[in-house]
Image (tube, rainbow, N blue to C red; front, side, top):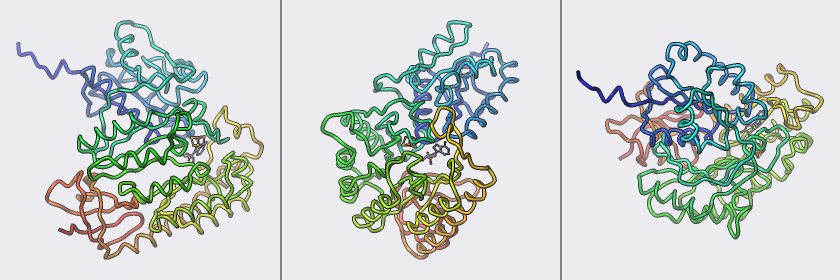
Length: 445
Ligand code: 5AD
Ligand code: SF4
């Protein structure tokens, strides 16, 4: 009999919902499974373990996750040994793990955001017993260092700098499911970045719900200091970070960014709304004027900075006048990109109890107007690139276009053709065609 190793290797398949934070956490789950001898499967059907890393920031992310979990019922029936695990923000909501267990009794492991790093033990417990494991910790514990990671975004590498959030914006569920803000030690972050550059990564993105408050719980450090320290690492690489909070985005930090030869000239500064009344109801702790002042400071020190943002429409009680304040702010700032969202009611948040929830149709009309406005700004900004040569970091290959793609320091995407594999290289591209957000050009030798 021929013994095939192939059959012995167990395979995992992970589906991630939500933001970069979640994508990086999936890299940790993949890292843990890799250290246990698992390999990545090409599809759910080939997998021995399927993990859903969920998000609950908006209702549609939750609905998608539940739909996809439900669709596995048949596969689980056919493949008795298949393990299905569900974790992340969604399961961390009070009472949700039990609800999920009732709804989908075939799930084998339900875990939360606070014990993701303990996934190896959860899996071992499951493999040695027939029982379902439902283990969601109510409170966050101390930061765990040294979790293995199977990274998936070369040439970029994500690096956590803070976990949790203390801001309690009234619409947001994050502080409830991710606990209070905790900062990693500066030397742990810098050492991780050093190893990544040594391994050949060309871009580092520092991650936190509010990176600007990094170090508030540590002695003698802050985000500006961290930026300076990471920028000192030798070698050519780009440094990015997300997400920022206007109330904590200081002149000291702007100066540190402007003096670094590593930090990209793009800043994501979520404004959420342009009306002071709505900003107050959101508990954002800045006014539209404060926001304009930050933009002016940024442009004073970094004249070519590209500013992107998050904007929400349909927050409870938002009037047409409030919305027009947002439109006006968007027009005045001239963002280089904007993620636009319709407010989604999240149980347990203060906004969910507010009177004056906005009709879906009204919110849809408002978001469409914002999207159109932003698209037209994008087109105008893209046209300015025509015939210019820009340095981009090649980050992938687009199969449909049959072209490589990458971004410049402003985060603008450019496509180009090449016979050689360019992924992970800094290249110069002359822009010959523009459209919407993206650019097309040719390699300049
Ligand atoms: N509804 C809609 N959008 C939300 N965001 C956060 N919470 C909600 C919510 N309840 C958006 C904010 C934030 C981004 C990550 O998600 O704009 O900046
Ligand atoms: Fe949510 Fe506000 Fe914290 Fe961002 S800063 S994660 S929007 S509570």
